[in-house]
Length: 486
Image (cartoon, rainbow, N blue to C red; front, side, top):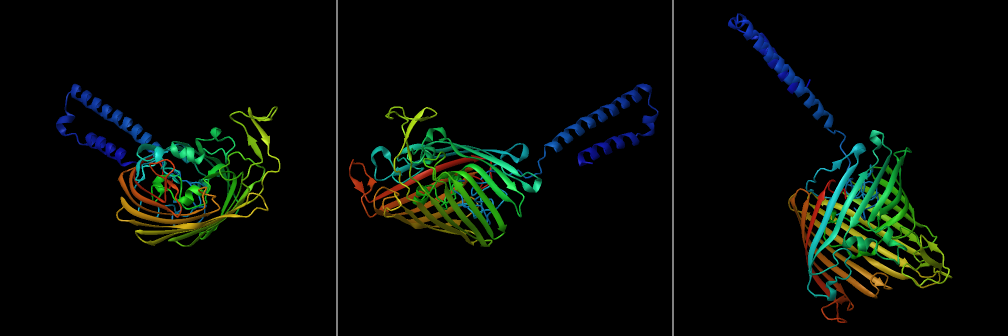
């Protein structure tokens, strides 16, 4: 019996047995009054019992699961299992390599809005003010996928995420996830008609997939739909990153894919991943080739996680769409959009070799390294274009609320695959992150971009600079989801 009920019953018993002799000889009116008091107490006890039962029924002892960001590491073993679940995007029963900003003491997160079956509803707002000291024309920051504007109060992202991951421990083998996004980052993620034949249809849907865990061994998880890419260390949601701005490699490597992916956790030290997808940044394909991905997630120690990824694809269209007119006469259509096949389309292949590790070197120190090599051909007989380089990160968590991080990277754009110019790009970034309140982070950042060629905008049209320096204030609010759940 709950303590509240027990205490009330003891009070009634005490009143009933503690009548003094004078009370026993009271007249009939006194006896009727005492009986009425007893009746009131019993009625009050009944009311309190109902309230206690209602409160007890509302207690959720299941430990509701929360959502997890975006370009996460592939799902597998890792020192921070919830940390980079974006791997199988951000919320799964398996563990994953830790994402930026999640490896050390984390700020407490507001409780998620939880519904039946462990389903959570989560919200995020990410805004910034940035100043580019080149004072570029149009206030445009080059090579910045999210912080695209200088000298402007900007909305980077507004996101709503519904997440209901599988929970095989409690008999739930299926799950689903939906990420709706709005703002400048949305245009970056899905605004390029060269990659996406009809991007406007899917622009605000960053992720939408269903999951099922096949009861084989430790559980073979299958996801179908649109999901964040695991290529590259950094993720989509700023709250889980070391730095506010994103690296060149985040910008260059794929953001998302549409297809089927599988994850199997062999043991606590090894997990394997496989995908077959439409292509890179292709919710709808523009050719009939299905790209393939193979990934391994290793955790040789609790403080060290290593991901090794290989992606093989064909990223050239075999059809041309005419959404704004200009189609040839009698052209076929898809939902009213005319198109025509490309004769002798290019079929050169894309190869991406990507690897990164996370090491919690000390209680407050996190080190990250990433290396990438990309080869692409236009036709199968064409000379290859190469992009190669990597990035290094270090983060120190001074207190549970305050950390500082630095990033340095190099990208050799030999063949102009990334920037449209043969050049060697470098950047260094220093970021301070402060958790001002539960669910509210403040980022301050200084970044310098370098090139060996004049490339970055200045205040004069046609006059380019070999560098750009920026100072940024980023403000991120979120409701729902653990640290790393985005």
